[in-house]
Length: 258
Image (tube, rainbow, N blue to C red):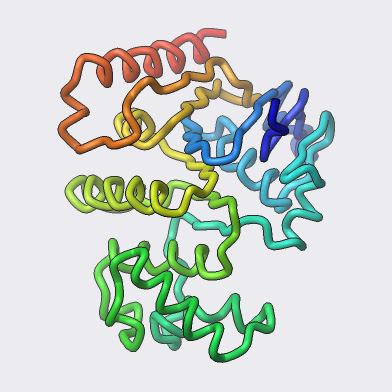
């Protein structure tokens, strides 16, 4: 059996605050395999983003174990094993789109030729070819978020971590970007960890849906999707899609009652 790309065993995280300890994660066990698209869904404050940040080495668990590519999250971060897409695009307004995508490559010491190649490649991946000389304020919110995804893809990490990247967008733009993200995932074969509050989004995108309970964040269900890999938006009207969405909804309800 293949070693999971990401593996959590009895993972706990407690924050010490002036008002006492806050138990953010408790007893989290999860295996994520190469090429999985895993969505994390649960109520606000349940630890979805905290768990993603643990994978990225941005938070340190206080119990249990967590490995990324067989190493500690901190070492995986140093090895540039992942790209991270935040809720807001976070583009520097004084840099062009190409300049924003190029920034991590500059920091990593890529040659100027390699930088130019990677910028062009990732712009094409997110359907923004020809926009490298535009500034963020000249692009729509959806296009800015696609540029943010391109920046995370620029150094070609095998893992892509996404923290509610489409949460602030309207439904029409969100649907379009969901469809584009599936195409991108299919083309690149990357392992994706995706935080969302949207049941339809989680079901539409994922090979695996991780349902989490209110704090302290625990996993109440892990749902393996039976949907085909090729998913037009119309699949959301199918019986199979509705059944998976119902199971997610029931998992959220059960978690809130524990």
